[in-house]
Image (cartoon, rainbow, N blue to C red):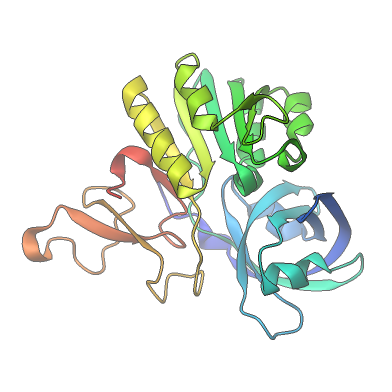
Amino acid sequence: MVTRDLHAGVHETTVIERRELATGVVLVSLDAPLLAKTTCPGQYIMAIPPSGEAAATALAVYEAEGKRASLLFFITGKRTRELSELRSGDRLDVVGPLGNGFDLSEAARDVAIVAGGVGIASVLLCAQALLRNGSRVRLFYGARTAELLVDAERFAAAGCELVVTTDDGSRGERGFITDALARARRPDRIYACGPSPMLRGVAHIADRFGVRAQLSLEETFGCGIGGCWGCVVPVIASSAQAPSFPPAALGGSDVAYARVCKEGPVFWADELRW
C-alpha cells in the first residue's frame, strides 16, 4: 500500500449544505473541487474549527464528486459541536486528503463492507468504487438504534445488498454486526471501519474465512500529519506500511509501530499485531 497524501494541502472551503441525518449526526457538504478530485476512498481531512479555540479534528471524507466534498460525523465534543453549527455560506479550512485509504487495486468479485456506527462515514467512496468495478457488494451495517443507521437506503439504492443489526432490535437483527458477518456467505475480500472491538472481531472472522481484510482504524489524532507519534499501532516489520523510523531491526523485533494518521488509517488485518 502506497502513501496517498501526496496531494494534501490546506483547502479554503465554503459550506454549501448542512443536514442533520439523525439526532447528533450531521452531514456538512463543502465546495471543495480540488479536495473532491484528489481524495481516495478511506482518506480523511483535519477540519479546523472556525473559532480557533479548539484543535483540528480528523473526519472521514464521505462524499467526493465534482466540486462537492462532504463530511459525515457524530457530535461527540466541543470540536464536532462547533463544526455541526456551520451553515450554508460559512467558511471552513481543512487539511487533506490525508493518510492511506483502501487498496482497491485487486478486483474482488464478492465483497463484504462492514460498518459500525460512525464508521459508515469512511466506506461510501469505497462501496461506490467497488460497484463501478463490477464487484458484488454486501454492506453489513450495525448501530445502536434504527435512527442511527444513517443513509442505509443510499447504499441500497447504489446497489449494495444490505444487512443491518441494531443493539436494541429496532431494525434488523438484534445484536452485533460481526455475528451477522460470521454467519454470512464467505466473501472474497472484507473492508471495514468502526470501533476497535468490532474491527478485532472482523479480523478474526476474516482469518477463519481465509480471506484478507482491510481495516480503517478509529483513533484520536494529535497532529494528523505523523509528527507527534501519538497514534501508533503495532504491525509486522515486513509490512509495506511499517515506517522506516525508528528502525524496526533495532533490538531484533519483528514488530514495528505505524502511525494511524500517516501509514494508516487503513491497514491489512493480518499485518496488525494489536
